Length: 111
Length: 115
Image 1 (spheres, chains in turn orange, purple):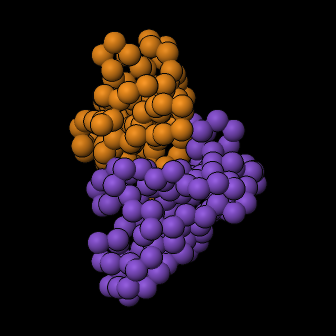
Image 2 (spheres, chains in turn red, purple; image 1 turned 90 degrees about the horizontal axis):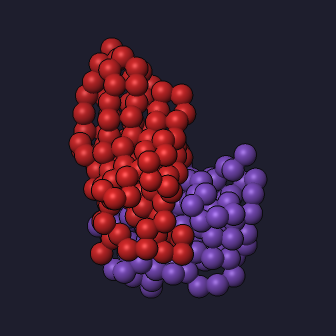
């Protein structure tokens, strides 16, 4: 059974802190690893990682995939209260049709 | 662009009744739509993959006779929860794939409460 695990489950930080969110996966026919941000409702797409060791960056967010370790991290620097959300990672598998989501990391950024 | 809507946003129904949830891609055509279920503090669980004009593919453990999916057009998929029970209360989210399946755009979700 495909499995995606995220850690920590939740964390609280102060504005300006840097956070690292972890995602590990055990799936068959792995294709890519995706990160999403879920605030109140629908998840919004952040990154898709297919190749190991290549960092993807968008503003204060960056992510990298380690296919040897079957894991990925999402870094957020200089956190802001607007970064408060649930961050989901998902493994895209098989023919590219299926996303298996992790349980998410709930991030809260306080003033 | 790439906006997906769901209707209704929330619904309360009585046990034994059926509820239909619509998922629409507003500004693009989606050959594939996905239905997810999310319990509180848990992740999204894929229920089924819906392809326009063909039968949906259900994930293991999802009752296809209980969760009826119809993908009648390239912009509309519906999920009908039949004979709803309190344990069906959940947050249902759809997504529509633009081109490649990994380009999934999520709808805002529907909160279903069965009393």
